[in-house]
Image (cartoon, rainbow, N blue to C red; front, side):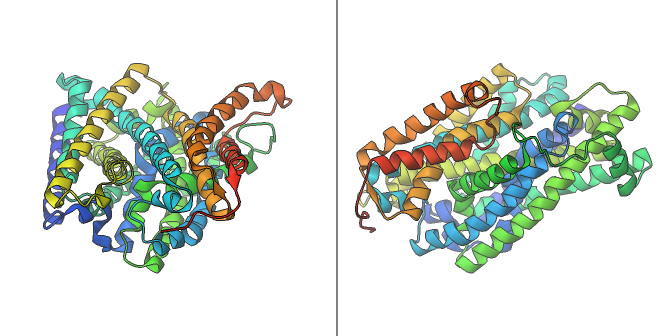
Length: 485
């Protein structure tokens, strides 16, 4: 299919996003940017969060893992589902009770300023690495299959996309993103459903026959019962639950959208609705991956992994399907990137700079500071995407989960200690604990096979990291709770 036509589709898509941003950003101020004036529709937030949670990693990497991991990723998805209930009925009530703009302000009220700043910085590092990895994955696919043929360099593509993200988020912030994420989630799911239906039609098989063929090849294996393996089902389910609690419930980007809903009850409805749909959508992506491998086998294609879906969609499917795939791919790119830059800007302004508490700055001065921070994070995103391009690693989803276990573990320990105990801590030593726990966890993982009789530490490293943080905080604790304010 003509790269020029596909590139034109990309430009048109940007135009739609900018139009939505122009409409939603009318009358916006800093309060609008940070939490959408606490007036977001819970149904829009629920639907839009699907796109944010899935991103390009799910769109490209999950179908590509079927050849090696089969359907075992669904074990993690079941864990996600459990974790969303904890977020809805434990964390959200806490955030609404304290009327938080930044969820990390809870750590300030509970422990003190050092714990607060540490939690915010952990989020900033975590989300920056995770979002830029997702952004790199999708840009790289667009580059290889479309833009290289037009002579457009990777750095030019990255700069252009980040510029577009800045244009439609710099003013409206969360208010704009709630609407653009809804639009982008629709296109992503449309691409998923259309590709599933067309490939089944192309192979002349129905759902039951396709599932039967996948089963005969061993692809439908979900549960791994080897207790020593990284993918042992209990480890995957429990680890998935804690990933959701950490990467959704303790993540400013995800919670920023939830607390932009006016009422707690509506925000909880959003979370439960979203989690139910996520289970179905993730299963469809796994099923699509199986169909892609059947299609590749039928056509004699040697391609596997992250390149499989784009290769089939852009080179072996009709032009209209290719166009829908490109729109879905772009839609997978933006919810994780635009929301991340907005949330990082919000967290840095509120948590690190204390912008919302600075009485010496008027609205205009605060806006100038916010825009400067926004531009700075865009530059940071550019540098990290170029770095990942230089690394050129094909296993993005595995890298993403590894990063999460180390960066979100201390956040998990901090919040767990605050919620489950009534003890205060030596606040100045809190950053030391939050650095030491991941370092010790990393050393443990490197030598776990020898030290633990062949046992491989996998996704449960997040729990171990959180537990070590919890125990570290216990050692620096003292009787009495810091007075909340």
